[in-house]
Image (cartoon, rainbow, N blue to C red; front, side, top):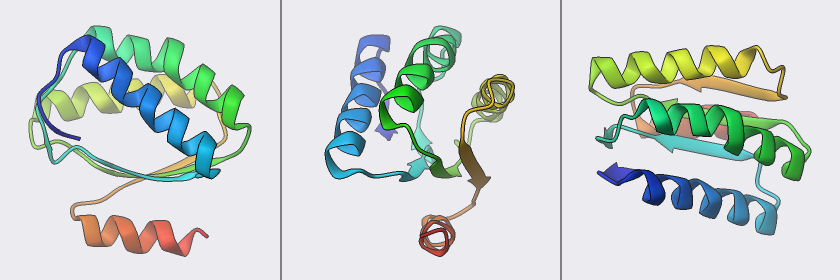
Length: 112
């Protein structure tokens, strides 16, 4: 994800990810937020309460997520809060944080 987007664009972006994951049976994701500026409580609530339940229900498998956090500390804190809420839902996923895309790729490839 790069740049900035509104809430509708955010939702559409994630639905596109889900569509591609289903089409290609992809369970390994790199979520690079290093150049992404959008931070919204509404988006985090939507992601945890709507997108993730739909995602795990439709993919029906463990998802491996390598995340490169955003540079903005407030945005990073919001993401960590959303991930704590996700943890309480007991979805089958592994998440690890990385500082570079290369490290994220290496970890993701090690999980195949």
